[in-house]
Amino acid sequence: MVFTTSPRCDRVVLHNLTWQQFETLLQTIGESYGVRFAFDRGTLEILKTCLDIERYKTQIGTIIKDIAEVLNIEYDCLGSTTWKREAKLAGVEPDDCFYLQNESRIRGLSRFDLDRDPPPDLALEIDLTHKSLDRLAIYARLGVPEIWNYDIKRKELTIYQLDADNYSITETSSIFPQIPVREIPEILDRHRQEGRLATRRKVKDWVRNQISE
Image: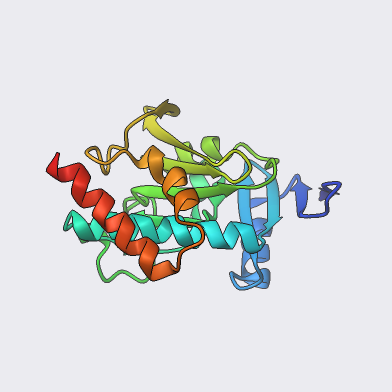
């Protein structure tokens, strides 16, 4: 096992790990230490989260829930659950993730097997610094249909949709096709001085306006 750290010490990268070593680290560290894992064919990145990432994860995750509520779409939010497939040597913990189109298929499940169960319909990634691993390649091997990537510094939301084995950038979400979700950063910026409840009301009004046009 070989490891490296980034200059900012916000991550650790381990090389030449077996799948069993990855599983052991997951069990040892668990999901409650403020870190995110990404595993790609023997390389493991352990990325430390921070206040800004958690704040935007919560804000955008709440907007996703509010859009679903206004559109009367059932959903399940599974946060930073670890998704993995040993056969693909792939594993990742998103900042947030949602079942929407496949919510009824996983309703009530407490354990998941991606060789049998569908992956989340939507994964949310919040970027503050450059990540060492190509998470899109990992998500593609897990079969996640859509990724939203929010760049904090650029205040930009990029939508990726899976086509066969690769992602392409698109202007429209396949999950909420009638909603211009790339406007979400502008909405957050416009209402950043308002309280959480006031912002949620504005978001719901924005969604209603979109579907009434």
